Picture 1 (cartoon, rainbow, N blue to C red):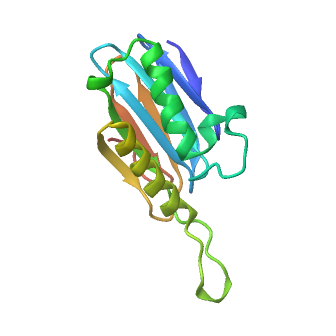
Picture 2: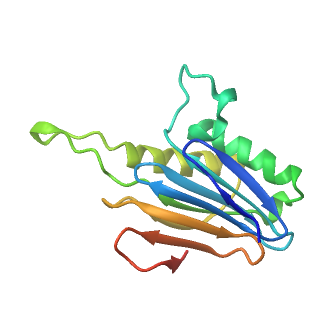
Amino acid sequence: MTELFVNMGELKVLEGNGRLITVGLGSCVGVALLDVQNKVAGLAHVFLANSGNHKPSDQPGKFADTAIPALLDSVLKKGARRYQLKAKIAGGAHLFPTAAGASLNVGKQNVEAVRRHLREVGVPLVAEDVEGSYGRKLVVNVDDGTVIVQAIGQSAREL
């Protein structure tokens, strides 16, 4: 069985069978796009909400605004049918409290951006495990379309 690890800022796609795995989802968001019938899945490890002045072509999976369209394009090229695609996401934790009670909630911004860009491309978000204050691991099983999330210190569960 093929296992592909998706590192921060990357996106990868598999068809047939195998697993896509990403770890270290703190404020980052793991975005899985699945076409269960055609056994195609993609996974992006989104680091930030917006590419701004960065060059997204170098690493389109890094930003929500570039990752979602690039992931969609990649799964379609592998044989997914757009009308059968579903999305599942995990991550977006609040891990960076700052002094004096103020905080910058990068995780929440990432989750909101991913949701918005999924809506814009017309892929329904059918499951999520987001926010909180703990990291996660995400495993996408391409052959049956199951997505497993495991939070640090908790049992793995299906999304």
